Image 1 (cartoon, rainbow, N blue to C red):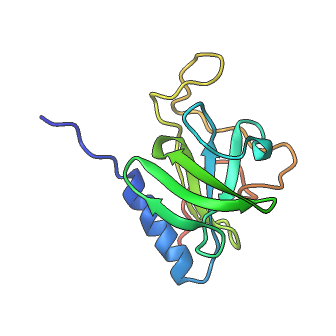
Image 2 (image 1 turned 90 degrees about the vertical axis):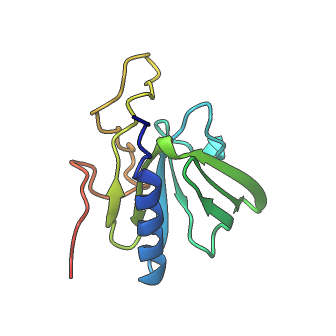
Length: 142
């Protein structure tokens, strides 16, 4: 039997499209590791939140393995490369609705213990990411 394809990148693309179609600003929450290329000066507690709206990102590609785009940080264009496995969530900035994911079981925390099943720690200042940091779930509203 062959290994199944992850649903995560497909769900990420769906939430991205929903955000854009609804007039919301799509953001991604990323656990930064050695394979993640992001502006490290904006990483807090090993995580970064990035605006991936069409206005903020250029040449956005949400493929099955990576999220790739270029964006300006302090006036300088930067190439961003995010492995899909490091994406912890994709959500609308305006209402924090979206999808949040557990860390992939193959990923390891800095201390070498597996992080599967553990929620990622929230930022200390609460200024980035969704406001609610408890159990992660999708809010459905009609």
